[in-house]
Length: 164
Image (cartoon, rainbow, N blue to C red):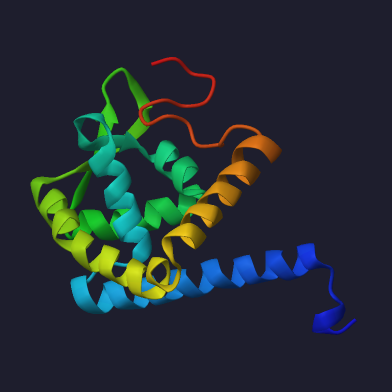
């Protein structure tokens, strides 16, 4: 079966996967060069920055970013060595570890956002007109919410099935 013979669903799915992979690689390269953060580091800092008290359970970060716990652990290790995050144990449950944003981490994250948005615009959003961007967003939302059920990401500060 040649490329022209592929079912439309497969062609669209393949294009979408290639788009996401390509933009992630480009963002990672641009961020590393310009602000010294990987895309994963930027996303972890973002999760912590948006969380109450600027801290989040490590397992919540993994769930929200759809990454393995080991990948989050390695990313937090790098950020902690740089003084951007600190690990905090929950005094009531020693098994629970939080990643907490330091003041340096918050300022580093804030300083990185103009570059992140600029590169996101250059490699993704700026290549679409407003109608295309909105249409793509609506299609993604339809698949994520109507077809697959509610998002797997718990609200910030909560774990699935666990009240806080």
